[in-house]
Length: 306
Image (cartoon, rainbow, N blue to C red; front, top):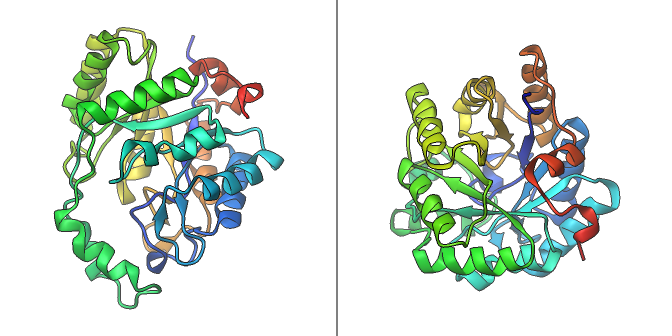
């Protein structure tokens, strides 16, 4: 029997900047409020990045993560999923997940270079904060380092703490990396896999690629994997709807897409979640609650948090 579809909301991310949308949250209280509202709209999981509350630049500060997560937990039972991505060292990238004892954390399964993002900065007419200019200008030389050693460190340290890792796979080779770490015992079956389509250095948004990634994952893991899908910008809704029809869970949110529809900025993450929920229900798919998602994904539950 098909399980209910899990909606994840990626609330703010680290790629978009405050100048790109006045609705992108970057203060802890705003990130938390949008996460809570997204949960009320139907998100079972919120995927979190932290930002400097003064100017919105990405930060790995455990203190900032703690403020965001404490605010969310005071009002919602939504599952907390904290990123371990970024250009910093593994110890810094794990600070938020460890400090907040999150039930989940994302783990990128290969190194990436953010090609094309400097062009996004060229379309911004007026920057809200000075750091944004260099952020886009330096992207041509930036590498998100996810070597064997980095993945090994994060998988071991967070796995020992009972954090379930969501393996972010931006290309087919990343699926084989997951299988490698399963074989080594650092990732446990059933694995949670998020296939990512349409980001620089990764596989494209062609429908055939969605089918191909699912086919390879089935060959590698059989029925011992949970599937979620995301795509950026204008591709978000179409790719998520296609994958949901194939049995996938879905991710929406301002980390991946600032718009609700063509030419209309999303006023909140909750708007995107509500729209995705409506699409799923029109497809006769039921949407998972946080506790149902915990049961499906084998999470330790809220009582395991600090």
